[in-house]
Length: 564
Image 1 (cartoon, helix red, strand yellow):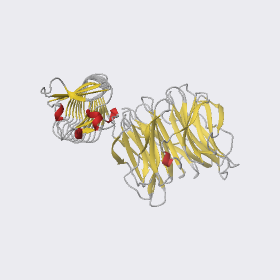
Image 2 (cartoon, helix red, strand yellow):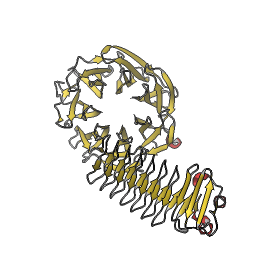
Image 3 (cartoon, helix red, strand yellow):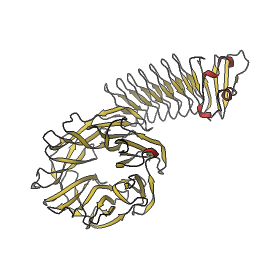
């Protein structure tokens, strides 16, 4: 995107599928007379990048740490810290409005009169009521470190309410971010000091604290040295936070919360074990999942996660050249599902440049019947409404049927297929696939490879086909056929009446861990012959679940076949 002493880029997606990037520049472009200024460019999916423009008004000195958001009416709001030349103790936060084409709509406005050694990490958000909340970490001259928040109407930048927030369970703060939520409230995402821990504070639209502090990390072994937080709210209301943890080597960690801020599952490590990883950023994707980018050993890497919070394949290397290194990535998801990533590159001649990359979008259907076929490569596809036919072809694809009675074909590659609402047919094709029927009476076919099949709700038919497959009928009265290979049939409580058509003792296994049996003898006591001993059917009954095994008597099921 740029060259020569550019750094600290921020991104925001725009209506219409484009994005705007803003960064701090020290090369004097736009009349900044060699001092540090804030510069921006707008990218349009049809025309590419427009000309760069200067955000701040031409005042010598330091203009640093920019952020940008698009307002509900399409205007752009930029924020940054500003200090006069030679006055490092007089940083103050500023904002300025532009139209969607990059034309200034007035003068810059100062939103706090309090001087500081640094007003770091300025972050902007628009609440559901239209008001703006800005946050920054304030290292003030008496040595105290606090977070400050400013509330203002974007049409009245002269009327700003500034609030100082101090830590409840830590001595001081060392960083802050804001995340507006769908219900009109917002999260203050903060890092405490001594210990350095990641915290949530929930505020209403007026800034009143509703709850907090809430510890973000659930990892008791490494709950210290946490920094560089980012968070996003997914389409279903869940919240995902990422951060780097420097305890025992820098690493990227992640935690999912439900919409009530209750932690879901355990804290997950995003970066590979042993890799030095810092500077994470996160963005939601239109399919209900999310992407995480980070600096892993001076390479910008991207991880995709599905709507279940499970990683999709290994990390993808976004940056293509290292030179002196890459760092400080940002990520946004565009309207068409494309992902844009930006970062700062440290060059061999000791300059810093800002780079970016737009990654291929997903394929999305409409509200009617669609036929979508991906390119040969890893892709997202979402049929949305209607009775769709979705073809994955090659690559490790993630495909959602969404609403309607859909037919989904993974093709070659390690695919993840989600039928969702409706009576769907899922065919994994080649390699090791994951198939989830979700709601409706679905048909799941694993194909080749060692596949995982989950029926979800409804009366489903699961066919493992070739390979060593895992079949989970889940809710409803399901029919499970393992096919060739050594398969595992998994059952849980209150799952209805299922039928296994081809269980083979000594090859296949029956997973009953969800029932909490004391041992295999206890589990075996819940099996009997279904009907007469010579009928060729055995039965398992426990806790609202019945499983009928066709073609095998009770004598044909051994305790060694069980997983408890």
